[in-house]
Length: 288
Image 1 (cartoon, rainbow, N blue to C red):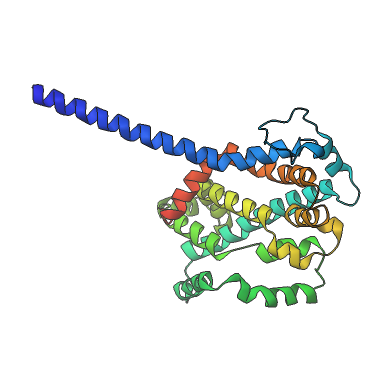
Image 2 (cartoon, rainbow, N blue to C red; image 1 turned 90 degrees about the vertical axis):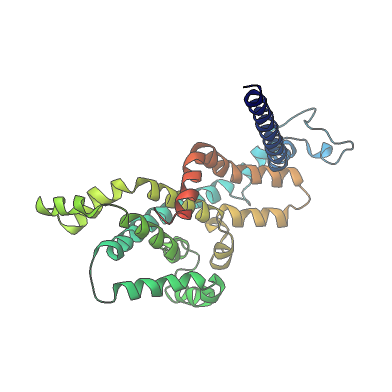
């Protein structure tokens, strides 16, 4: 009995030490990740003549919001318009991406037609093709359609993805076919089954794809930088490159713009962090 109690006490002590070590590591990691965000906010509210003082202060003596006011009101920056462009493009791209990817995935998961599996495998090979390979053909297509410097150039090229089709198709395969057969007996058509049965049962997969698509569209810099020229059509990531190039000496102004651009993403992560973790786990399990 004494041996059992000694082993139990030793096990609890090891468990406590391991948990203490894990929490210590996570706290250090949280500080390393969170400090740059904190410092960006601090610099953005610090008067310009106090940014480069030494020693550094973790909080300014006289915090100010003048940099935010300036970056939002300067006519040559148009930050509110860039913010609207990012919200509009990200939202519309996400809606179209979800609809087209889910409709395509439903076809591959439930419809029977010649060459279905061969076509699906062929599409999967596109995952191995780098985006740089298709960059020039897509740009030429957008240019020939007259879409340069328009929302069309930002929305339509990303309205579907192989990853989205694969993720949703794998999830649709896990839904019992008996539900669809019962709906067919009740007189439901294919689209009604897709819309009223498959999509509601695939909420977790759709939420995961929504998160990844929206954040990808919001943070995209390379493609908008290529297809946009007019100042008023730029999205936030492209606009911040202009801010960093033109006002490189005004660090507080740059940080204020960066905080405004990052705030929606950080808020998005804070609200949907559980869904994001579930989405990562879902993609790792292939929809099972």
